[in-house]
Length: 244
Image (cartoon, rainbow, N blue to C red; front, side):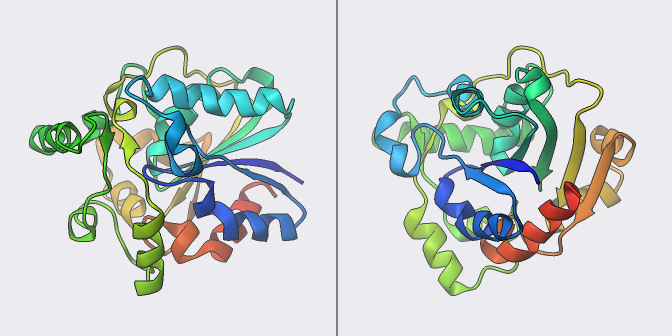
């Protein structure tokens, strides 16, 4: 049985993984959803100093504090950035890394690099005018849906997402990933590709070409960008297959 550390994407907390974690536990796994600093129930722990390095430390700190071994790190969306950083620091504690509708980050890369310059500038302006200058509120769904599929989210799920989302510390988007991201040769590497990411992989986007080759394994999940909310049990099935 596997030990999963489940890291949520932007605006989310451990709450987003509750149904998937329960389904993994029903299958005999250990599932540890993590809330990153400045989000959800840890919102009051964040501040202008909260950045990508803070979230990398959150992940490595959980693993080391609980003396976890043979860990499977799971990254959803934004969490690809801190999970990539943490994975490069965990050494032989790490057995596997799974990216859900996301991909590893390269050294020196930040979240804003993934966006057109105009979109990145707009996010900077939104963070500057948000009231405290260091947090980014979740955009309206009509904006979010332009880049992240909302497939599978009914009105109830959208209401939960909107009501429970917390502003993202913007330093996590602007700070560049530092340190080694190299993994031991024996670390298993898995992609869970939902509609968004499967389309990019199938289109042969050059910067993602390496993900279609060994040692990467790909498992598809036909739903939108938030599978832990739109298809939580199916996501647990895919994660279970990834470690079988």
